[in-house]
Amino acid sequence: MKKGIKFLSAAILGLAAVACSSPEKMAEMAENVTVKCNPAVLEVVAGEINATVSVTYPEDYFHPKAILEVTPVIVYEGGEAKMEPFMFQGEKVKDNYQVVPSAGATITKNVKFAYAPGMENCYLELRGVVSYKAKTVDMPTKKVADGANTTYMLICQKGKLDLKADNYQEIIKQTAEGQILYTINNSTVRNSELKSQSIKDFQAALDEIKANERKNLVSTDVVAYASPDGDIDLNDKLSGNRSKSAEKAFGKVTKKHPADAPVNVKSIGEDWEGFQELVAASNIEDKDLIIRVLSMYSDPAVREKEIKNMSAVYKTLAKEVLPALRRARFIANVEYTNYTSEELLKLIDENIDVLDETALLRSATLVKDNDQKVAIYKKAIEKYNSAAGQYNLAVTYLNMDKVADAKAALNKCEKDADWNNAQGVIALRAGELEAAAKYFKAAANETAKENLAVVDVLNGKYADAAAKVAGKTGYNAALIALLNGNCAPAAALTCDCPNSAYLRAVAAARQGNAEAVKANLEKASKCEKLAARAAKDIEFAQYR
Image (cartoon, rainbow, N blue to C red; front, side, top):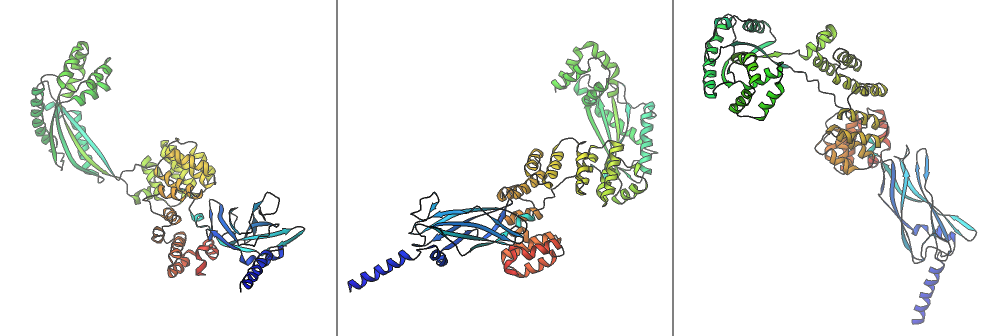
């Protein structure tokens, strides 16, 4: 019995020893060699296909004197791409290749291919040639993985651009003003003041407001002051008395010029603000010194003392400035209703010259035709030397894909954050990712940050891209979430455009929702390019 067991063991060892005694035997037994790939489905990242291939050679498979040449090949529509072969040798080969022992081993290698159009419908295979002495034999081809996923290429690379704000106001705050002057230490309103040119102009303004359908008188302020000389308490009392007499005077001034709005009566006391304004606007030799004193001291008594110490200057102030501060002001607060969108559209066709800079800039955002936008921005530049118009012109050219014209327009713009972002967009569209990133980082605003996320995607930095668009919505943000394994934002896209529908279809495919895949691909297929892509896209392999 023991002799039989020994004979059987010897027979098995003998068979193992000669199992791969030649290249032909290695080829015949190649089915015992197992191959795994990570990822199982190839993926294009930053223009490259990278994968890790593990080949397990069983015990007694690899001939100790054989050399094996293994070539990774991607086969795709339109051709194939080959890597430099990996070289392996048996234990008794005297060369410098990687040794595969007779005891068996798992060999892991990284494979890398540059993406070429057509590889979205491809597969990776290993082709081998084994040689022993003068004999060579082709090994059976081993298919490793299918692919390749190119979903990241759906990222929109047009770049996001902001227009400069037009600062157009639908309601413009305006004021109309008149004033009466008092004599020193007096709160009586002189009849001559009620007939002054200032009051006549104020009455005319009230009449014009009432006649103008675009203007609405919201309120009127009656504000009384005392000049900042003398005792503070006396000046406060004097200002209060002037507010009372000014309120009565306002009634007389508006008797035939109705001001149908609330009247707010205020007493300010010493008019240091008016004092500073008048000094700054004067030709007084030492006005800078006076203003410096005002900035150094906040206590009114100290201010007055310091200014009086400049005796020569104070005489000038007493004569030229202080009398104008013994006053009461009548201030009409008005809201002017600006042109509506409909009126602006009509005016740019019929009477564009009446529009100011902000109205021109707003009008350009209302028209749909880009050529008309260009004409309006050029008008704003020509008539008002509009910096905003110059930049918005460049943006419009970029929206028209007129890059040369956009560059020429940008050359006349200030190099601010918007300028850097626009230059980054130009570089991004040209595929100059390093330059684009530099400009976007220099811009350092939210729009540039979103554009920089696109650069991250194209460089394969999906997590970095996700951090930059955190909290954002829209197509690119949804795609970035999808690349990071989150299907929800893509599935929730509401836009009916083919691109959004395609992205929803990808999300549905990953979630196993066949019905949603079909429905969204029908919408996406309105775009011939997307329809052709869907027919080959590995994302939909199980739904074809």
